[in-house]
Image 1 (tube, rainbow, N blue to C red):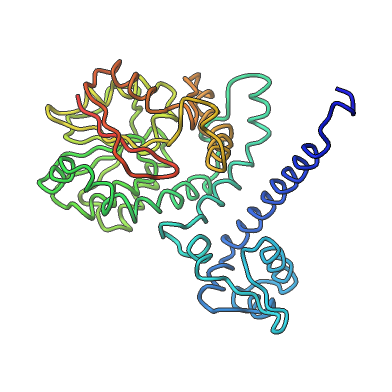
Image 2: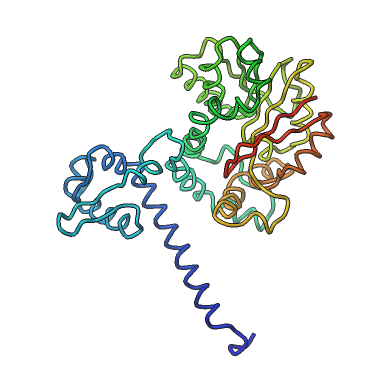
Length: 356
């Protein structure tokens, strides 16, 4: 194209957009530092602070505190008073940055994103050569970030909001059900269910050995190790059973063989059993997977979901590959008779009640 064919205003607008996106990546990186070192929590607990005061509270070097505070103020994460030279974390911002386990907390997202970017070289190589990055290549902070991210709904929505929208499942749990969570990861969701519904028994399955060890530690910390057990099992093979309730939480889109996984779940359900599936809130239309959530999910997919599946020679659905129509088709092929989407109005996830 010649220079005269370009729209100069459109070009300027896009350059400004690229600047904003590049700046946002730096803001997220600074937020990772603040989360890792407890700087947001120190501001939330102790109130406004100068760089020297924050350095003393958090046990860090003042010069780094000064630069970090300036960056966070420039981004609007913190407020700055030139008269007192103090920086404030507004309570509304603290919900996202300092309230660990709260419904709006983003610290886990920040930790996870920083961990995923360390796989750039391997992912770029897979772009050229095929295959992907194996799950074992990711560090402990990847799993910690994911758990802290999901803790928002595990602690605040799963029992108090979502299960009341599944009255048959809730009644089953209260009466005493045999529950399995497939692809349990660190087991946080299963531990939360065990705390809320002590009459039921719980088993978590995951193919990844480090996840099983982490899940057992989480069960001990939650005080439910007597009623929750975890086993290393490849869900592509037949699952132990039968179970009255089987759950997957953001698992099917990651699976190397999604159809095989769903068939294994169907076979492991007891008569009258229910499968509850939480997975990504996405569309099967590219033009509808846009905006901040769509951009984030595409990035997470490239850096984790898609590449770990392809590393196993898998289907590579990716984070946006399990839309409702795709799930319905796979469930029909797996032998399920009905799929009901539950209205939870969540930015990141859809919830489904699936029956044989």
